[in-house]
Structure formats: structure tokens, C-alpha cells
Amino acid sequence: MSDANNLISHLIELRSRILKALLSVLIVFLCLAAFAQDLYQLLAMPLLEALPENSSMIATDVASPFFAPFKLTLVLSFFIAIPYVLYQIWGFVAPGLYRNEKRLVAPLLLSSTLLFYAGMAFAYFVVFPIAFAFFTSVAPEGVTVSTDISSYLNFVLKLFFAFGVSFEIPIAIILMCWTGVTDAKSLRAKRPYVVVGAFVVGMLLTPPDIISQTLLAIPMWILFEVGVIVGGFYAGKKPQEETSAETSDNT
Image 1 (tube, rainbow, N blue to C red):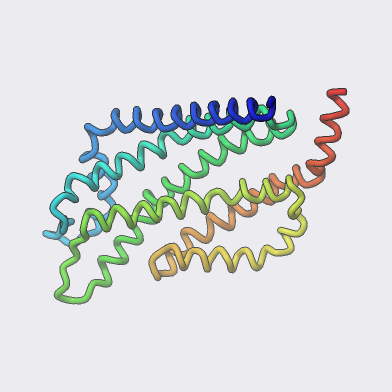
Image 2 (cartoon, rainbow, N blue to C red):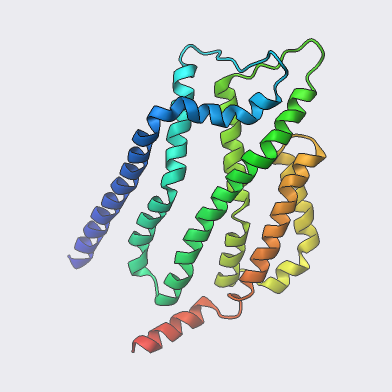
């Protein structure tokens, strides 16, 4: 009976934290909704600056001028609310973690959020201007480049997500080293394969030009090296050993 009560209490707490997370996204959305058109204008700036003279974006769907900016605002609201959403996740799982696990997970949540933001910023300020300049420059003669606003939004959101996830490489490496899946020495031995893999990923996620591919591959390689260095500090002590030490301290 006590197990059932514990399960119900956990489910109630989970529901409460999910509602709080959704409420935070809604509050941010309501604050930004009035600036939806301005936010889309800001997002479209890298493409607008690359478009030929007398060319502009178009809307092929009747409702897209209204829905595209609000879709962007909703996604942006979630991105902004990510720290609070992660805080709710942390608050739910923290009671079941050992003290040493709490010391590791809390900084990882913060650093993963910052790295995700850094990946998005890198895409917007570095990759977008180069990529859109390339796309508009290779248009056949007689073809006017006029991108649909909904298609553009879907394209940049995919790139934001791709670069944000790619910048999480150090977090993934640290977790693998900490759990004993691998260690820094093994990862260093695989460095040539990682470099090749970074350029392959860059080729798949960016336009087919060497500049854009390199702009993603090099940061991924650098982040891999950072992850290996930091992960080396966690590979020497297995989680089982830490758990035993924690248990002995409690007794």
C-alpha cells in the first residue's frame, strides 16, 4: 500500500512540475507575442541581407504571415524557458540521486543549456550569413530568389536545433567517461575518426560548400577536445565506487 502511495505522490509531483514548466513557456510566450513580427524580422535578417536587390521573401499560404511569426515566438519561448524547465526536471529527479551525482548533474544542466544557446548563436551569426550568401549566389540566371517565410522558418529552426545539439558534445563525453562507457585515453586514440566524422556531420548539416562545412566541423572538433580534457577528471572514479563511498559515509 505504501508503494502505491509513493507512486501516486510521485505522479502528482511530476504533474505539478510539468504544469509549472508549461506555464513558464506560456508566460514567456505572452510576453513576446506582441513582438512576434519584430522577432521574425530579426530572424530573417541574415537572408534578407543576402537576397539580390529588389528581391524579398514571400508568403505562399494565406495564413502564413500570421502563423509563421507566432510559431517562431512559441519556439523561442521554449528556448528561453529551458533553464526553468530543466530546473523542474532537476527538482523531480534530485531526491533520488546520491550527493556525488548531484554535484555532477547540476553543473551539467547549466553548462548544457549554455552550450545549446552557444550553438544557436553560432548558427545565426556565423553560419547563416555564409550559407545564405552561397545559396543566393548559385541561383541560375533568370531565377529570382524569393523564399517562402514558412519554409525559411522551418529551415532555420532545423539548423538551430542541429547546431544546438552538436554543441552538446562535451556533455555527452563527460557523461560517457563518468559512467565508465569509455575514457579519455580511448577517445584520444579515436581522434582521427572523430575529425573525419565531424566533417561528415558538417557536410550533412550545412550547405554543400567547404566553408560552411568547416565552420561546423572545427567547433565540433574543439568541443570534442574540451570534452576529453574535462571527462578525464571523471573517468578515474567509477560511479559504483562513488556510491559505495557515499553509503559508507552515511553509515
